Image (cartoon, rainbow, N blue to C red; front, top):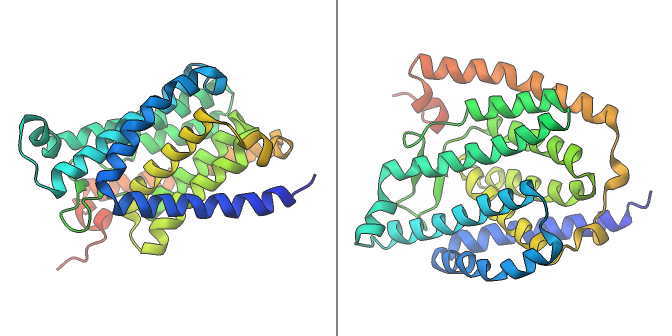
Length: 272
């Protein structure tokens, strides 16, 4: 197996994805209009780059919310007035983004189960269970550029990353290397910032960019094909490890909620 194409292409793609997160976080207005304009590429999607219900559901359920995130940031940052702007600024609207995250995990979980990757599917189900509730643990930041902040924990972020990587390994081995890049970028960015609550923002922009590239012109089977990496024993063991890891996390998560400690522990605030 020739690994040199991956040694070169994966770090380059990882760097590009990190740059995308930085750019779209800073340029909140351009971000909204860019992702709105990305819908003009739908004819390219229909030329064979997006096929099957899962691919269409995935890209639509990522691009549309990314557009809405952009306009919500404009509404918050510029304090826009009007019926639609006011709706986008309401705390209750944060449930929409919670629901989209839940839906995206659920989509992959169902697909995982159909592939027989049951332990990893169980992990996906428990990830849905442990998503911090909106609007208590979700907000658009007043400071900076009105980032969408979701108070997931560093542990939840890591489990999501390894669960999703295992899912892609099972569902699309050819795209495992490129998908690993977007997962590492989303994991790495909040670590570098020391702010785990930026994980969802990083995940939104890296995933949206990756899916758009694949939908318009799918270069990854050529420059980053990882189909030969697949091993069913690795898949089975990996799924089991993910399940074993998340079980104690579920108990911790529920314990924090039960004892009213979640506001402090999820948001990493020291008790006074």
